[in-house]
Length: 236
Image (cartoon, rainbow, N blue to C red; front, side, top):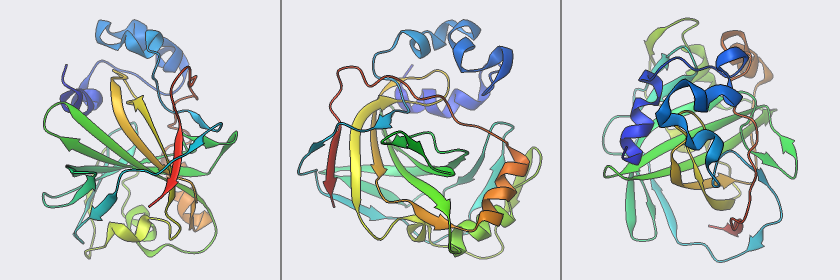
């Protein structure tokens, strides 16, 4: 299954959950398409440690302020993104498709997981995926996160924001980040995903984290082994 298609269909497949009898250790048994969830050698998320300092490819963001719709699909809360926003990695331009929220953070840094993680899902054609990830910790108010959580549906459904917001405000000011090759963090766990994870967490209100926690107490996959992959760290 092409990468972009597998990501888009992940929410429509056979039932799976983040715990219990259909949790992560059972994903591979739920559908033959999920086998790589248990057999893959490049799975995500991972603990970001033992990295190599490197000069990363140029990265530029062109995300348009917009009136996002916030969706509860039964496994997470995410924002749908209209056409026209993109991230350029080197000479390749990836289209921003969704902004997905996880609690706690799926990735760890030196063994520490933060309160939440935002994953900006990008595609390039039918076979390429780029995930840009931002870790969240309790602290000062972030107006964009506040607006999104205020409209997060408590049950299955969609709520539009009242006013356009700029998703660029969800990025940290310090642009140090990790890069590695990995997978989707949900079934079918398709590999060959480019991950960019910002090293510095962004502060958001604890009350906004609590709002999400009331909807989903946990929706993060356990950490996966790094195996023989290279982990790079650099600055934009």
